[in-house]
Length: 226
Ligand code: C5P
Image 1 (cartoon, helix red, strand yellow):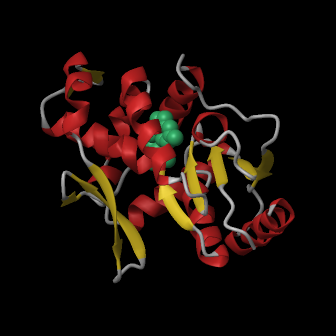
Image 2 (cartoon, protein in one colour):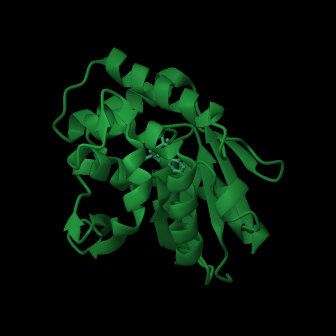
Image 3 (cartoon, protein in one colour):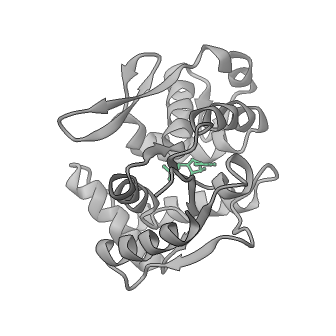
């Protein structure tokens, strides 16, 4: 199979990163989590007093160049960890404080321009699977395969809640639901590159599909696209 580019977009907690990682392993491609990059910028804003009460200071856009984001393969977990200015923040960027503010940060056009540039650069040689909200529409409009993921809200809330629980957090169901609704709303309605399904993206509703079933479907699509 030639090293194609695969763009996976969709709503929050639809299992985009799970499928993206599985596909990368199955097809020998490089997995890049674009959401982790927005989360790292949001964490930077929080740590530097640039985000309070759900509001992000415009000062953030002046110091974007001082935010270095990189990925480092972790042999223990066999996954890539996200580094913010050299510090491993893989756990921290998944915390509630970051989830609460990340979509506000991601709606800032300068932040998007900055990260899209990095993402295009990371994928310039091809052979990548990237997941996010604007990968098929903006980052890799020429990707050989585009997948748009969705699932019923209850299923998504359940999955996200279980994931947080397994990591030692104990959010209520309603808290998780509110955060998903909040992010999906902001992500779909922002002016700059909102979450949308492009005409050439295959719709994957995984409400009733398990991980293996989704992987097999996607591998078949990738084979046709290559
Ligand atoms: O993928 P994940 O849920 O970790 O992404 C966190 C947030 O980052 C999303 O809710 C969205 O606001 C933003 N994001 C984005 N564009 C991307 C990836 C993520 O706006 N390509």
